[in-house]
Amino acid sequence: MARYIGPKTRIARKFGETIYGPDRNFEKKKYPPGQHGSNRRKKTSEYGLQLLEKQKAKYTYGLLERQFSNLFDKATTSKGKTGDVLLQLLERRLDNVVFRLGISPTRNGARQLVSHKHIVVNGILTNIPSYSVKPGDVISIREKSKSLLVITDSLSGRNASKYSWLEWDSAEMQGKFLNTPDREDIPENIKEQLIVELYSK
Image (cartoon, rainbow, N blue to C red):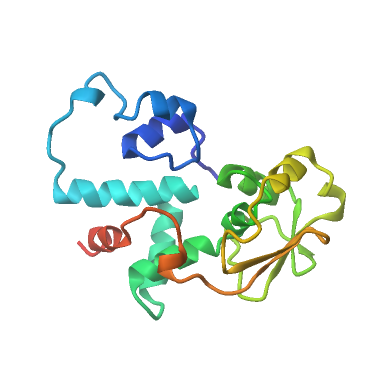
């Protein structure tokens, strides 16, 4: 499956946020990219704000347009507020859960670990980044992959109690998805209502 592999700092500057994590280059130039990036005063339209919010969510979670659109369609047919359900579905993606558990420092890295068959779900090797994790699922690292430097380095700097809906066992090098997080628990700065309004047009 294709994914965005272009310059990340440029995208972060577009949204004015470090959506890919700490970025020294972003700190030097926080304004939008382009010749007139630091002097733009043009007011963004309502549609422009909605589109920007959708793009931010797509880049944050590493989805392309069709994937994101399909996920939104699924959210509209589920119980609950569409915007909240959309973010919950994004959080339940296997690559995102691997990232949240601290097995990888980035979502792109987590996606690669899943695709390269380093991750096991409930004892079954799973290499589909979009796999939807369910409450009670146990996510672990394949036995042969536990000594990988990229994994051990990432786990050495993880915050054990960072997310209330996840549980981590350091001895077994495995985590458990306890429950679907509430919207207020999801830390991403995304205005999901703007995305709902965009798709409702």
